[in-house]
Length: 179
Image 1: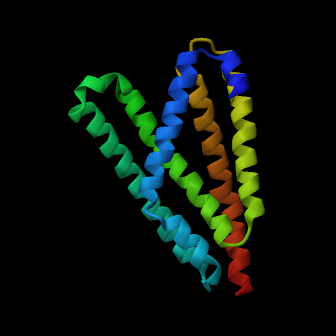
Image 2: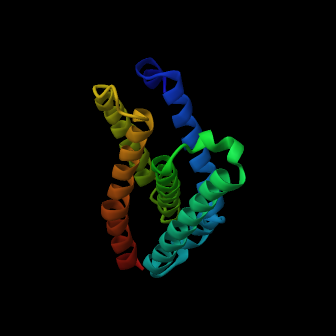
């Protein structure tokens, strides 16, 4: 954030902070406490892949629904605050970011529940490192709207993709073979 504050305007930093905080809050609501259940029960499962798939499906759907409900509420019921979501591009971006944050939180719970916290560290490291790289790259595109938020989104997509398509399947295969 210190580097981002030097590279980007106060408005961009403020909007990115607001969207990230709001998305984290909404994804926490959308999780319905599944994370704690995963930490408690996932290590005891003989086949953790079924529980993993169901958690991914549930959190994906609930994150999208909560994000859509928020956007509809702000744009319809609270018309005096219409500046929070000025157009459909921002609305879709907010819903996508709630979804991505929800999946990112979920993957952290999977790693903790499967007793592989080192993978949670790698997930965060990939997210933060690529976020910094995208932030520096987007600085060279001066007219890119919300570059800070775009950098976070792209890095989160990358970190979630690596976690869900590389780390987690290997971990589930290994845990399935051990039981």
